Amino acid sequence: MAAFRIRLTSDERTLLDEKAAAAGVTLSQLIRSAVLGYRLPSPLIVREAMSELHRVGVNLNQLTHLANTTGDMPALAELRAMLEAAVRYALDL
Image (cartoon, rainbow, N blue to C red):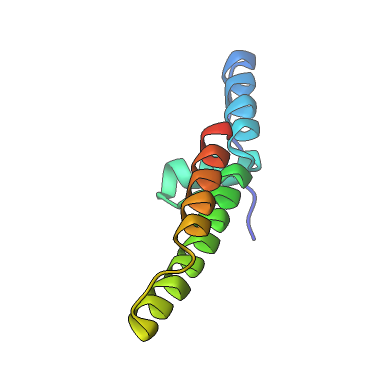
């Protein structure tokens, strides 16, 4: 790996440090993403929301399979409660 030096004003450095911290990445990652078009990793809060959404989707798929197999949807109230909880969770993020 090769090092690269760049001159910045103290205000520019502070701004870049703040942007990197807000994105949850290192300064090097932030600069590489800006210059080379790399995608930054998703913030933890987005990963948590996606994980919660995935869990709801898995449960929905299982309930849909049950409904298609048996012809009824006995857990409809449970599904509604799960979806409402997931929406509340996402809104609290």
